[in-house]
Amino acid sequence: MIVFSVWLVLTFSGMAALWLYSTTPGHQDAALTRWPTSTTLQRASDRCTLVMFVHPKCPCSQASLSELAAILAHSAGHLHAEVVFLSPSGKPESWVHTGLWETAARLPETSPVSDPAGREARMFHASVSGETLVYDSLGNLRFHGGITDGRGHAGDNPGCSAIQTYLHTGTIPLSRTPVFGCSLFDHSMPGDT
Image (cartoon, rainbow, N blue to C red; front, side, top):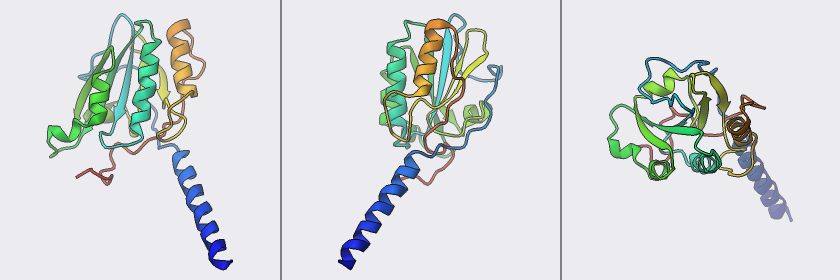
């Protein structure tokens, strides 16, 4: 009976720890309210531009890319996306070209971009994989946050709903949401060597 009780406590403790991890957002800094003039990223002048920052080894980011696919499928051509992949100094380009890169490359109206030493991420003040920013055609920030409800959890969420509403009505019901993902600048993830 004692062994069962200990097992039960350990099982529930492990489940609670996993739940807490999956529902704890990453740290976000305030994003730039205007499109930076010194960026090498391409902003569309005739529609909105979405920029998503991704750590190529973050398992949580597959859900973010799935949600981006859903947004693009319902955008009616009102959105251009740039998916920016962190490329730390000293890493070969193959380190960046993971399955996440391939997923982003298959999305319509989307350009995957390598970000050497995280220059673009730092310029946009992005720090969490999956962090998403939407700028209007004039370069004004309209949305900053995540487009999942938890780490690696695809499905209905406030970020996607807000972006889709903005693309179809021109009004943004929610301009900021938490981002659930790995740190962009944490190089201790599995497979990160």
